[in-house]
Image 1 (spheres, one colour):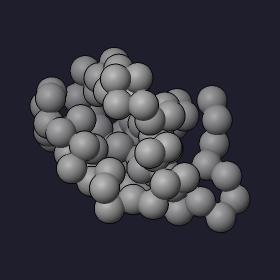
Image 2 (cartoon, rainbow, N blue to C red; image 1 turned 120 degrees about the vertical axis):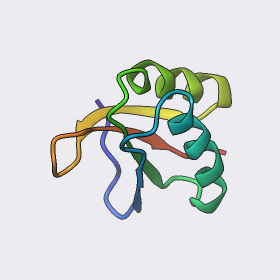
Image 3 (cartoon, one colour; image 1 turned 60 degrees about the horizontal axis):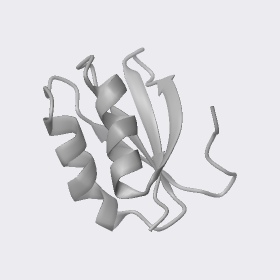
Length: 83
């Protein structure tokens, strides 16, 4: 897994309790507010997000950096804005 580069901002998007496809819809809406090169951490407890977020990145030309966990252990999917 890649990690955010030093100096890159990480914006956490709380999608706990939101079912497919809402986490990727939230990601798509939030991305224009993120600077190119910065990272969005999509925190989602819906199991479908594990597949949906990387697929969305491939379709939208963004970089999927992998998965880690939020402070409470909920999965967090890291996306770097490329365009």
